[in-house]
Image (spheres, one colour):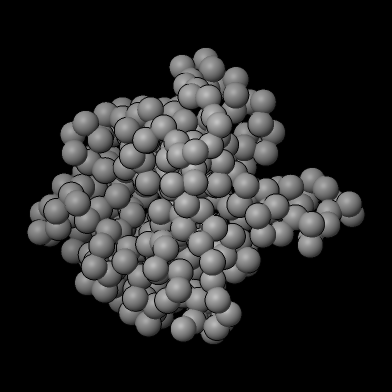
Length: 315
């Protein structure tokens, strides 16, 4: 049995792609998208007609409304392939505006509902800023479930759990990237692999804390650079994996062991912690990696959102 099938025994497998034509071969339960993945998809000949058709149907509408129509159109196509949920992202340029994030999330969920899709099949992706987490708190109280993304630090995870969000996406690969770049010539790949990978350690810490204290928020490891990171997180609630790495897992036959276990986590010696706004901002500030990667992630998603705007305006 290949490792993708073995992984599914421990963990819900999610496909990290806007390429819905590629999804069926991996049989994921859920799928996630982001502005960069959607931008990549609409620039391919396979998806250009879908973009043009959606834009044509809404000619003359405000640009931000057309963008949401495009994002939801992709989500609807993905939901024809996966049996579970799709994650659709709020514009990253709203990452520090709680009220605007809530309004955009409500509009996105309204578009799905108008297309006959229930709230249980959609996760609204929001950056894990303080403002984004408070938006998610309010949305969850309205029955709109959220996926808090660009999550790099323990304090972000704790605040998300306290806010009652449905799911978080801690970014394994981008944490690994930062530590590798920071170490420079001193980086030892072998010594920093598997359970010693800094991104893997971050997710394992969050998973253990959530399970220890009965926090219901789902943990979905994201942004992987190699299958070793995935193997080291087998047993995590969910893992969202790119098609390239899904294919590698499918081609690997070696036995796969469970790495994270809720029963083991519940035995851990841990203190319960919580953060108010000032405490959150200070804890995030003290973590240079998380501060830099959160800011960079928002910038990059905002750039790609702007590029998508330009493509839509050109049609």
